[in-house]
Length: 226
Image (tube, rainbow, N blue to C red; front, side, top):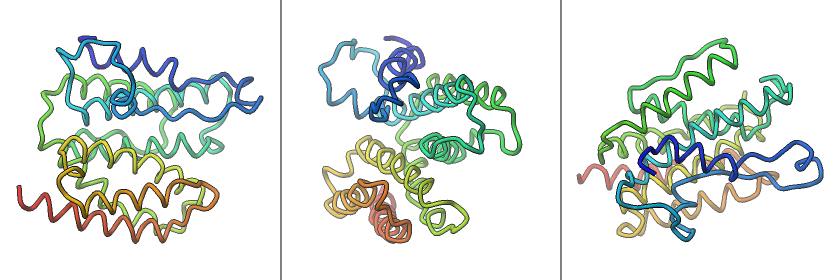
């Protein structure tokens, strides 16, 4: 598809949304991440006008959050009782937006207003002439978030959901820079983060924060050479 925004909306409709009745019957949660999932499936779209992987990732994450938030609204679930996965994806999108100088609004916002702003953010990112520097900005910002995982005011469940989304983000950003293929230290530390975030019930925020520091150090060394 020529429009990355339209493509994200088309994919998220099937690859993330699960009706409440189906979830109640035991259907597992779907985690939508368009760049990585696109790379692993048989291509059923034209590659001629494809965008850089990190740009695909971020547009789709914003669209995915908007859809999750809309689903909470339809099901009459208050933000205070929102599932951790919703808070996790918003955390990643918010920090990425800040890294790009495209800050999302903060404070006590209505759900409708937030959805509108996140949707506009997705459209704006889709229109960017994405460069390697923007990938580096997002990678630098997200890899430096270990203090967030030492914050005792956030529950372990929310922290686990943040980590779940974060490792997918780091994977796509490093892939966009071809870092993991050429830098063994980055590859090893990223694999450790994936292992840390694999089990939500067993998630250890402090261990994850420590390993995220290691990852950040290995990435920072790589970025400094560029």
